Amino acid sequence: MQDNMKFATKAVHAGVEPDPTTGAIMTPIYQTSTYVQQGIGNHKGYEYSRTHNPTRTALQNSLAALENGKHGITFGSGLAAIDAVIKLLSPGDEVISVNDLYGGTYRIFKTVFEKFGIKFHFVDMRNADILDQYINANTKLVWVETPTNPTMQIVDIVGVANKIKGKSILLGVDNTFASPYLQNPLDLGADIVMHSVTKYLGGHSDVVMGALILNDDELAQRLYTLQNSCGAVHGPQDAFLVLRGIKTLHLRMKAHCENGRVMAEFLVKHPKVAHVNWPGLPSHPNHEVAKTQMRDFGGMVSFTLKENTIAAANKVVSAVKIFSLAESLGGVESLIGHPATMTHASIPQAEREAAGVLDSLIRLSVGVEDINDLVADIEQALS
Ligand SMILES: *Cc1c(COP(=O)(O)O)cnc(C)c1O
Image (tube, rainbow, N blue to C red; front, top):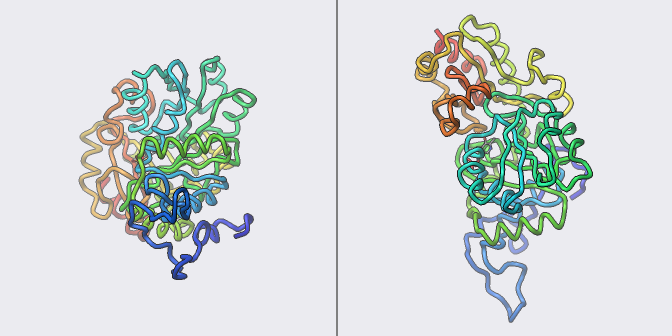
C-alpha cells in the first residue's frame, strides 16, 4: 500500500491484506495460543500468541498507519498501554503531566507508580511555559492529554514539544478524545501516541483495548518487549472487532463532529447552562491552538449548570431518554456522564475542583444518532 493514502482510504485498507491461505478479505480471528513449528527455530514468524498473533498484527499495522507512525503496539486496555510507557522509567525519574487527567491515568500514576519511586507533577499545561518550572535533570517524560477529559482543555502539542526539544525527555500524548481522524501528535513532535482504543477507534462500545503508536525503532523494541514481558495483551476477537470499527472511523467521526457542534451551540444559548466546554467554540480559551492542531473538534462536550450542585446534575442525567448514563465515550450511541462522581471520583475534591471538574459538570459523548432527537432529549432533561 502507498504511504500517501488519504485518511479514509487508510481507515478502510491500511494494515489489512487478504488472508494468505484463503484470500479472505477480512483478517480472520486467529483464535490460537500457539503455532506449529517446522523444526528447531524454523517457524512462520509466529510462536506464541502473547508475543505475536496475526489478527493483532493487522490491527497494529492499521493503527500505525492511521497515526502516521511506523509501529503500533496494542494492549488489553488503554491503562495497560500507559502502564507500559511508565515501565520505560526508573526510580528517581520524574514525569510532568496535565492537571486535568483522565481519572484512571491519575490513579495509576499516583497509587501504582509513585511507590516505585517515580515522581509525578500535575500542572496546568495550557501554557507550555509552565514546563520551565518543572523540567530538571530527572525529567524523563511529559504526558499530555488534549483535549483533556472532561473539561476539554487544549494543550499546544508543538509548544510542549519545543520546550523539550534536544533534551532526553519523551513526549507522550493521549490522543483518545481526538482520535487519529482529528489529530496526529507524531506529526506535531510527540514521541509516543496513546489511545484508549475502547473509545472512538473501536467505536461500538464492545471492546476494551489500548494502543501505543510511535516512530523510533529502538523505543518500539523496548515497548514490544514490555508488551510481551508483562503480558497485558488482548485476544484476537477484540482485534477483529476493532479492525471492523476502524473501517468506518472517518464516517463516524464526521458525524460526531457535526453533532457535537450543534449540541455545543444549543447548550451555549440555554438559560440553565453556566458554561460550555467544546474546543470548536470561538469562546474556548484555546480555540486558536485547537484550530492549528485539530482538523475538527469532535463529539465530546461538557457543561456546568448555573445551579452548581450534584443534585441539579443528577436531575439532568436521570431524565435523559436517548442518552444513556454511563462511563466511557466514543461509541455510536450517545452517553451522558457525571465526572465528579464517576470517572473522577478517585481525585481529591480540592484538586478536582481546581481542575474545573465542578459538582454540576456534565459530560456528553455525542453519538451519531439524529441530532434533532439528541438536542430534544437534552432540552427536556434540562427542563
Ligand atoms: C478511557 C480512557 C483511558 C483509559 O483507557 P481504558 O481502555 O479504559 O483502559 C485513558 N485515557 C482517556 C482519555 C480515556 O478516555
